[in-house]
Image 1 (cartoon, one colour):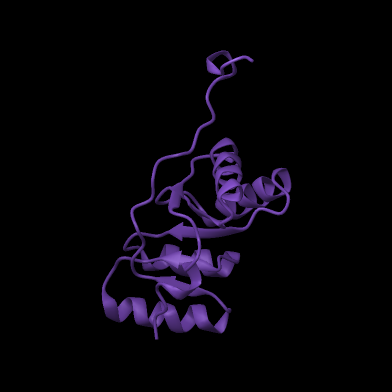
Image 2 (image 1 turned 90 degrees about the horizontal axis):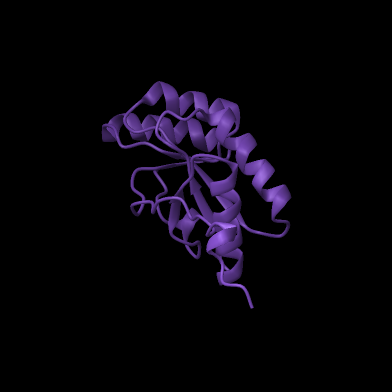
Length: 135
């Protein structure tokens, strides 16, 4: 069985992150709202890179909740690689029969395969220091 929404219920809107600055800003914004952040890496971004970047962001924003989603598009091999690297949430948009086989492999690792996700918003960026209003 493919689990889609339960692992993300109660979390914030997914945010596409391209680096540590994006991830930290998303975690800070979600923490301010009292919800876990949902960090989605760029398609083909690499599972180890995304996991390590999210780990560094969590260290920079202690106590912030976070779900990391590796976007594999329709690439089953990338989904398997992400699961092997330790991803707990994989987004796969390929054929349903392949998604079901991936979900079985994910379940063996305590992970889930998502076949849909609300469209991620772009990176959350803090305004430049010069643009901040001074008291």
